[in-house]
Image (cartoon, rainbow, N blue to C red):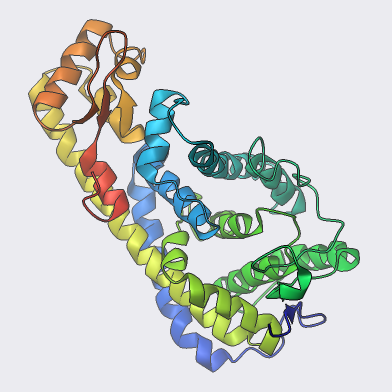
Length: 372
């Protein structure tokens, strides 16, 4: 095996960017991000309407690291309340994805009173590893031992060796300072910050997911998006080999420019994709609002609509017992939604077992295909 790539000591932040090569990427990425943010600001109750996209981001970011859980499995797991018919491996995958959502929510809560800093990163990491694989790898604490990326536990087979543990604290201090430094372009700055975080690899586990989680947190905190809802992982998951190769080229070849160009392209493509999906969700909401009001003739039509958007896979008992709708009315509305094809029955109810329903139109938008 060839010698591993080692961390780029003394070369962060880069001083040799080829700006003429980056400028053609900066404009399209910035414009696409601005268009997406413009749509975001027009969406009422973003946390409800875009909740499935947040779950999808957690799924895809975790999949880059090797988990196999799907969005449907995540949502059905939540709907059923930790079912017992899953393999330990599948349940572990699902809980890692759920922790990703918890971690970014924790970070957003902290950012109400804190700058984007190492404390936010550490607390998000602690939440990311809480009770899942990696729980015994010092959650919320920087590693004190060497770490490497490779096919096994042998350092001689490593593809990349991050910064040494004794220089890690200084490396993270420099990274944090760069977050708050003045730069020529914020998106290029974000590209550099993401690559540097992955190269530092400050934790024993969870670095990739945390580095991708940093993207919406940074965009949100500096005001480029009004809500921390930017989904970066779909393109990176589809182009995983190039993603890793570009990151390696930073340390191996000091090639920050091509990495930044790749990342700017990712932002542009994902901003366009995010906008298209968010617009489709908004259009679906408006269409279903009209349809459900006409079908149910109920004062609780909008409560019902918001429920199925926030929880597109759910147990009938959760809908009937949600508390926002009288139970007899909820039972009637549920039957109307099912009988008119708005909800698809995933599992029939029987005895004391509640039925499980899926709002397939919303799920298929999030998946980008007819998955349900």
